Amino acid sequence: MESKSEQNEWSSGVWAHLTTVRQQSPLVQCITNFVSMDLVANTLLSAGASPAMVHSVVEIPDFTPHIHALCVNVGTLTPDWLPSMKTAAELASKLGKPWVLDPAAVSCSGFRLKACLELVKLKPTVIKGNGSEIIALSSASRGHTKGADSSHESTDAIEAAKSLALSSGAVVAVSGAVDIVTDGKQVIGVHNGTKMMQKITATGCSLAGLVAAFLAIDSSRVLEATVSAMSVFGIAGELGEAMANGPASLRMHLIDSLYGLDETTVLKRVNVTRLG
Image 1 (cartoon, one colour):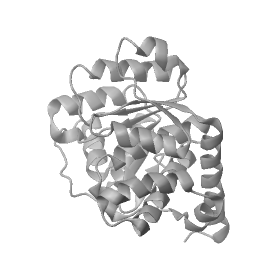
Image 2 (tube, helix red, strand yellow; image 1 turned 90 degrees about the horizontal axis):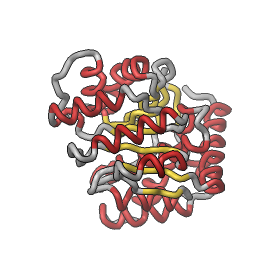
Image 3 (cartoon, helix red, strand yellow; image 1 turned 60 degrees about the horizontal axis):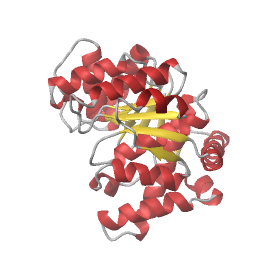
Image 4 (cartoon, helix red, strand yellow; image 1 turned 90 degrees about the vertical axis):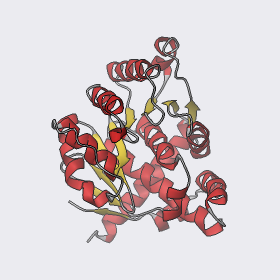
């Protein structure tokens, strides 16, 4: 059980991170899928960050050195996009800029799985996926290539997430009913969010972008920054659902709630526990 002082520490940390994102407006390059671009960009803007949806391989050598963080999502992966993703990731790693890998639907094809394994070798700061994606990627990283189905909960993926974190050097974040964040040793649970968010496409992609923005302003504390981003997004979802009639209006209220989050609400609603 988390002590009150520990819970207060998490809450004040979440608010400090959000405040810093709003003050610094970090530039986040998002090489993400066609379905998610709009919501990812609007999520970052409403949180106070500056999104840049720059994905052309010819622009990356000029543009990527100026960013504060990178988010790579393989949701609508094509052979044309993979060189952009790899070039940007290599450059971010070389320049010491944090970057997030979202291995969306990693096990749906051999091409996608191979691409994600190649991206993992480029040392992402955070790997963020759902339970099935993390189990599949962790398994493939150990030489097993059988894909996972989509029925896994985040808590099913804890051991796979710890293993992937240790083998890749990344902090691994697993979204689900309880979001899990681990560096391979510590395991933190984020209990904010709402089930209806799963009925809106690109909420997971948007969360990955938000994680990148929080890493941009606190890259030395990767686990804590990731927990803060997941908590903020979950709280915005809870507030949005209270005003929504269904997924379409939740999408609107989610963005509005993220934009309007205040200190009292954040400190009251953060629900973070240490699971291991």
